[in-house]
Image (cartoon, rainbow, N blue to C red; front, top):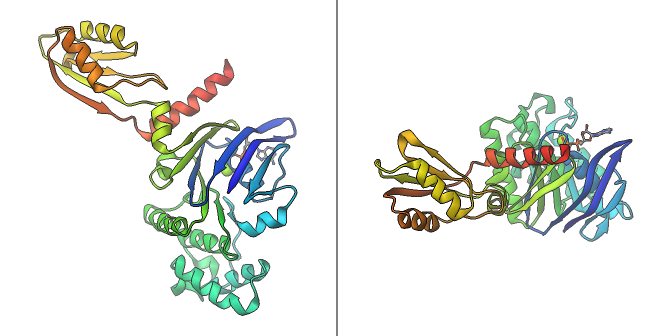
Amino acid sequence: MIRCEALTKWYGGFLALDQLDLELQPGDLFGFIGPNGAGKTTTMKILATLLTPTSGRALVGGHDVVDSPDAVRRLVGYMPDFFGVYREMRVVEYLAFFAAAYRVPSGERRQVVQDLLTLVELTHKADELVGSLSRGMQQRLGLARALVHDPQVLILDEPASGLDPRARVEVREILKELQSMGKTIILSSHILPELADICNRVGIVSQGRLRAFGSIEDVAATVAPHRVRAQLAAEDSPEAAAALLREALAAPVEYEASSSSLLVRPEAGQRVRCEEVAAALVGGGFGLRGLRSETPSLEEIFLRLTEDAASGDEA
Ligand SMILES: Nc1ncnc2c1ncn2[C@@H]1O[C@H](COP(=O)(O)OP(=O)(O)O)[C@@H](O)[C@H]1O
Ligand SMILES: [Mg+2]
């Protein structure tokens, strides 16, 4: 449904997007994650035909954003990270205005607006002024506005920013519903945990490059694999056990002498199973009291990815 091929954007002498490749299928709810300045908004604006790439291509539903912008616009609903709302308009007028702008036939507009208000749960605010809505409600109204022409693809730039937890949950529920309707949805955020549990695909971008792409499990396993924590018998030397494991597994091992515990921390791309750790320790004559696998936090995965990217570029 969406395909970017070596997408590149220079702003004057500044490289904001560097050969970005991306492919999304219908029904994908994609989390586009990266620190501020990574290139998320640039990518989304290109997909929404608001910006042209310097080189490379972007296709939506098979249409090139540069060659067929009208066809792309029919398929895409875009919610910018910052949108000026028409504060003096009533909620219904606001949506009717955008329905007209998107050429929804006049006989259908009323129904379209009502359906959208139901979807984003703003029916009770239909006659209020836009400016009187809370931030969360304005965000939902922005989402409704992006949906007036029933687009197949939704591109939402930082839709959760500035929302309180309750409003976030509401936005999530709407997105899940849209996904179940088969729409392709791209959401950006600079906070990985914010998106990880609703998205079936995530992509980590930093300095204009896509550093990782896939399911959150795949991305996590490549960047920061599971660790194994082992508890030794009190009389055993954790230092000696750590040395043995480093040798046997060729992986970094930390130990804490006071608690007789060991932590095997595989490098990115490496995999160490609990059974291997157990076999090596028992084979070496150590007493094993406990063993468990630990998953790194999403925050840590994100930091690792973006740090690696930064240090890689300095080198
Ligand atoms: N119009 C512009 N002119 C010059 N630089 C820009 C412009 N828009 C964005 N940039 C720069 O390009 C980089 C990527 O920006 P952006 O796509 O907005 O990142 P993100 O949305 O991930 O925060 C940033 O360093 C930003 O300062
Ligand atoms: Mg942005």
